[in-house]
Image 1: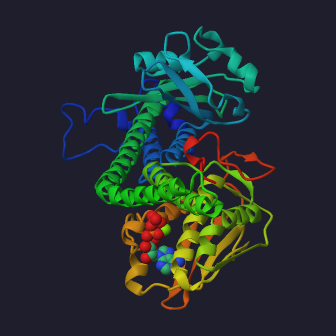
Image 2: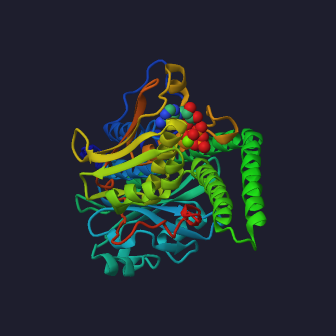
Image 3: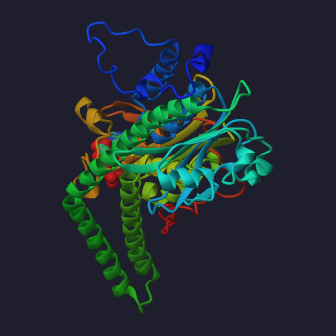
Amino acid sequence: MVPRQTERRTAGAEAAPAAARPGPAAGAAPTEPRPAPAADRGALDALVRVSQMLAGNLDLETLLHAAMAAAEQALGAEACSILLQDREGRRLTFHIVDGPRTGGLAEATVVIDDHSIAGWVAAHQEALLIPEAYGDPRFNPAYDARTGFRTRSVVCVPLAAQGRPLGVMQVLNRRDGRPFDAQDRELAQAVGSLVATAMHNAQEHQARLQAERLATVGQTVAGMAHCVKNILNGLQAGSYVMDQNLGTDAPEGLAKGWKIVRRNMQTLSNIVLDMLNFSKDRKPIYQACRIGDLCQDVAALLQSQAAERSVTLVTSSDLAEVWVDEAGLRRCLINLVGNAIDACGKGGGTVEIEVGRAEGEGRCAIRVRDTGCGMDAATRERIFDPFFSTKGGRGTGLGLAVTKKVVEEHRGTIRVESTPGQGTEFVLVLPIEPPEGAGGTARRGPPAADPRRPEDKEPHR
Ligand SMILES: Nc1ncnc2c1ncn2[C@@H]1O[C@H](COP(=O)(O)OP(=O)(O)OP(=O)(O)O)[C@@H](O)[C@H]1O
Ligand SMILES: [Mg+2]
């Protein structure tokens, strides 16, 4: 924690911290800069620390957590919260709340108007210093009643970058028991503007990544159209076989046609789900997943595809439960096992899915191993590139790119070992427990797609 400098208190209540002050006073000799007073140095130190904590942080959530820690540290405060503004500029939502007994506030909303402290600050885009919270009509004691926290003094500053309001930052109670003063407000403003700039950079970075991904998706539409055309041909062929056998005494003919239709629908569904997964930034929705059941489920889904190629599917698991985004991991396994079956070709072979503990604390290893054609070094180099495929019109080349993306969203790793002519092994290493604060729901019963993501539903199972 940055030590609070007693000199700051004696330097005059309205003294601004160095970063908030204009340049040298008129008439001061530019060649002989005066040493900054101790009060300014304290504020400057705090700001340098804040900017170091925020520097290079391009993930918005991580950044906001760092911002709060930085603000609390710089101001010697008991608690801090960041509220984000909606696009319409009507409401603020408590996005991150830190401090004792503040859990009940997460996701609470505040209207942007003059009736609350945060609302007032967002509406006027001005900082507010409230030395005695209970004496201010804008302070809402209901929050304290809800959390059990006792607010004494508040500094609230707007967060805005490039003229765009992003939200507000509230800092509560100095740890030394004294009320916040004008210096604290100005330090909070300086911290707020660093935080807002870092937020703006992170948002721009996210938008750029998204745009790049969408551009890549756009480039491949022609390739996709080719792939979808092949699937349509397959669907037409299947329907033709069914037509020919309708009303005849040949159920095997109908079954044959239906099998072709079903396989092509499954392929189409895989492509669409991979496209959706690839084009969006997604946070895993963690659930306690019975990993052995999930592997068996994927094997059952791909059983007919495997049987057509005389491929034997084997699954085993040493672990009961792993906390993952089940729909995401299911896609990874479908892609890996689908590739493994393809690699076995028509000559048959074995594909194994094996789950066990990985080396190191709290991580599991999911291995998908095949006895297929393997890959040469040049292919291995490119397999995670989006749209790289050696399967011509039968593959989009998105399967492994999506798999890697999902694994990395889980803070996991993926690696591959392959020998041409002998086979391939993919190893996913994932944390067994969810990251702190990720929430999640324990689930019992059969694996299910997440209802919060309609696109995760697999209609053709
Ligand atoms: N188990 C494997 N054995 C051999 N080669 C593999 C294996 N898995 C992937 N590959 C190679 O990696 C390439 C990329 O795989 P990826 O799953 O991304 O796309 P795809 O299977 O070609 O198309 P789709 O989008 O339909 O999955 C494949 O075309 C293949 O050359
Ligand atoms: Mg594939």
